[in-house]
Length: 173
Image (cartoon, rainbow, N blue to C red; front, side, top):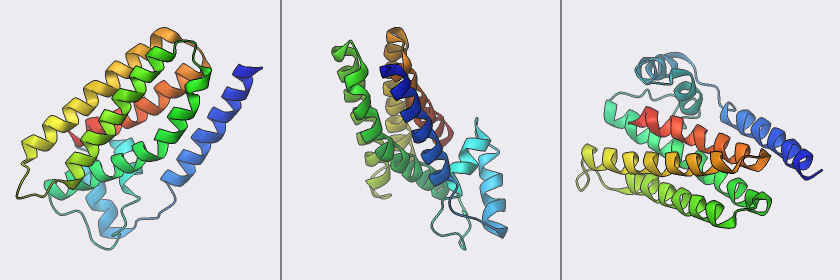
């Protein structure tokens, strides 16, 4: 019964996330700019879905730096939204230590994403941001590996959330 409840919760969560991810319509030059930049990433479809939420739809992405900034900002937004969902799964894990370790790495990932977004351009270089994103990616991979050993619906749900954030961090790199 507990796994059925978690499975239903996961379906609602994924449906809500997908619906909120595609809520903004982007037209014209902005979509062409998004297509051009995203087609150069390892996961162009996910990149485009992430960036169509761009709040400045009338102002196209004009540089690699602007693309990186926007990608990391959107990734951070998604990671923060998923954080409470990830924490709510804790009660469903037999191994609290593994889950707590994963959540600590997830919090470190959010810290690195926040650091990448909030550091002034005249203080941080692109290589600083890439190093922080690489650290975030390592944290996410380590957490996903640990959860895969545990198995179960809650583990699969958490791995799915982590995979989504991993794809966006990979695209930003």
